[in-house]
Image 1 (cartoon, each protein chain N blue to C red):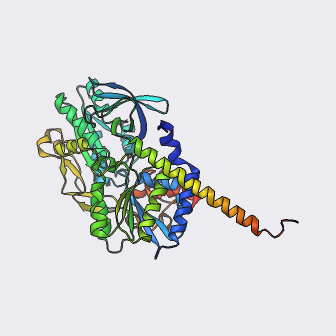
Image 2: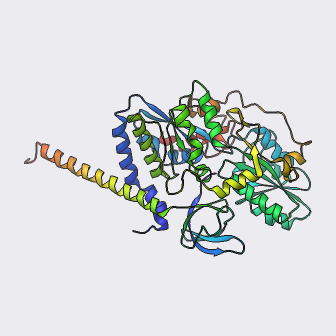
Image 3: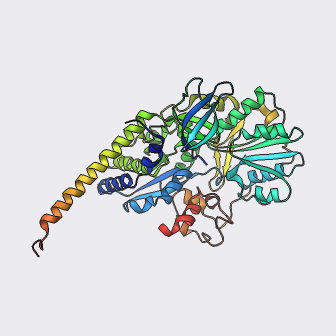
Length: 96
Length: 373
């Protein structure tokens, strides 16, 4: 019910206060009635919900999250590598 | 790097990131003084948690209580009966969102009404009413409005257009409800088992995180506003666990790319212009919660189908089924499989209780993804 779809704005129709957005290749129209005038621009990422753009997605914050995820994956990979080396060191049957 | 649209989908569903967070949560949870119960308020989160098998990734001392945040599930039967009665009027076209199709009232669902000849239309957007009204000038189009704060501004935006364009054949039956009042009502039960909340995603986009400030402050319950993707949910769980480990109780936002403290002010203005708090809203499963529903302001009575059709709408509240334990499930006192009618008399195709009504309800999610548990 409350799900919405991240989309990219490709066209703005000022006269009717509508935008055309692209959702992974599918284009559709969305009302701008919930957004302040001039707030949404072509190229912006937005959330689309039941025919309305409900807000803009903050690119900087999204990228910051992705950066955090990269770091924790690297940390996990590093930890797994260390663990593998330790296990290897403890291996009794290395010469067997 | 610059952001691509596919980043917003793929990267927030990335299996490796989910695994990394599972590891962090499992490590941190070893330091928890006691086990914690997190309530995901919103049905969208329930769906994500079940679909991605998140419960199986968590340690035994981090558990979930599935909340009431499914607007279709909590709709009391008497209001579905309103929709049914309105739909059966000769000159009425009843319009609502697709989620409402199968929800059973005491005479049947809106789908049943349609099979008996009623003109019921399920639309993608409230704005679709404009076209239907234009094409059917001799009919009265009644929009049966449902949903939390997320969908309320869209109803207000439709009313705004109706008034500005002087459209005289669109009316509204309002069933909008609000999240914080329901959260307070759950905490008011002394036996509730809720230690922290996963805050809804898109309710918060509209209302801002400020609506949850009372919960850490007055109830000592941490709230983390979470996005709907599985990585969002895992990160938010990790943030909640860290709060307990560090002895904090705060409001935090994980879903920063879409939520800030103030929310969408334009949307809030529209809501404020057309709606006011109703005295009471009766939630299926939870009962009466004061000030938890919205109604149109009196000056818009000419658009209010509940006022216009007052004499034909049923007034008697209809009690929940005796065997249904949805109320206890929503408070964290019981889980769906503990219900005596779960999966037998009560199934998604023939729901008896609120939690089975939509795929966002706890029981329906357990039914669908139950083989994972």
